[in-house]
Image (cartoon, rainbow, N blue to C red; front, side):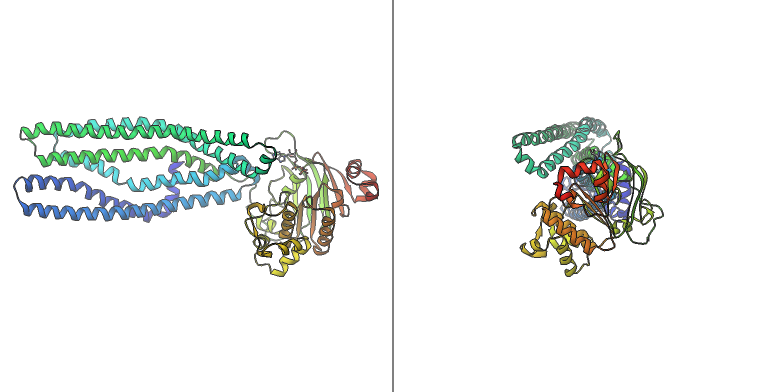
Length: 577
Ligand SMILES: Nc1ncnc2c1ncn2[C@@H]1O[C@H](COP(=O)(O)OP(=O)(O)OP(=O)(O)O)[C@@H](O)[C@H]1O
């Protein structure tokens, strides 16, 4: 997965990558020349006292060093650019793929894991690209070129290379192999920390209300400790690496000087050659060490690439149509034909044989006890899930065949848990219709019975809203979410238990204003409270995922026992009559 991901995301930046390769090539070749020139200065210049030679070759060395520095800087700059661009593209790809997911896929991965995958995991791959770009050419050129140059200096001593390089490789390799499983564990444990943290932050009020701080602190401490443990284990292995590398490096230098000294003594080698050989051996070992560092990053990046690839390869279970219908009569009339639905992995279906028509210009209410399947039913309309059997039609067209933009554009959904985005009241209201006028916004707020409190808020329409809408009350949040749907002026309104946090008087005023202002639209209202739906044109009674009654309030009151039970549990006899 890592390889294919890198190929796919590096390809668009091939020009920069070519730049990295060329500048690194120049830099590495320059590095290879320096020890030879140094040897020449010692053997030809110092040994013979030729100052002119020393100055000439010294000047050349300076020039080469400057070239090397410039090339290295440019190569690193290009490399960093490539890495950042790959990171950006990967994050973008994960984000847009997640945007296509239905609720089902989001639940499968879990929001915290999706966040880790698009941040930490992408960063691991980005780091690998950065390191690879820095070492891609340098390491092989320095090691292979170093071997050639060292042999050119002295063949007799080259057995030292043949011994020290494999020793270094084996030592470092055996550490790297032990690190792979630790990295895999690390990513899942970071997921867990994110999950625990997120759960605790969102549920902070519940935690406090149930005096569970101590247990929650302990739960977080456990998750935190788990990450620390695995990071420490990999850190210990990393720490072992440096002394081993240094040991091999130092023992090799001593060996070169030891055996070189004998050869100098018997006159078969010059001092400069020995120093050059030593430099080349150091270059080779450093290159091997750099390559192994890169090797350390590969397993971690590979784990991360797998996790990113898994997201990218997951198709949404709600598939957009191949040949979408792009136009309908635009009335928002809704029809369900024998609809059934089961949650993935669930034994029992949540909805069974649900059929009804919600006509435009009319209000269709759905009532039922908790868990009867009301939210599941309304989630099928904007295709948050697809029905497992039967069909959902909007204006006579199956929602599976409708262009998603057209479908979503026609629907104004007020979810059971209204969500407001961080920004202002205005930015939230403009969410479905960015070009709405100020007058339209106030009109929507008036209908949603939110005008008064928005006027009183500091800043009015520009009053700040915090993430999730936590700085307004539950009832205010519901009304702002209703206003947001109203600004959009859709053909089909879906209110999923949207009046539950309102007091009875506000609820009644809101429904009256809605009725007067949404003329011609199709209204689907899910409610637990009978008073919220008494005047609906059609009421559907849902029980265990089946429609067990349909009609007006009066008709159901006469004929339907389930409805009668709901009514009698909620309304006094006078209210119901
Ligand atoms: N994501 C899910 N995965 C599995 N089962 C689910 C999921 N969401 C809901 N259910 C189950 O489906 C059934 C119907 O849930 P649903 O939320 O549609 O009920 P509801 O009538 O809207 O209830 P309420 O009035 O309390 O909101 C419940 O038994 C619930 O346990």
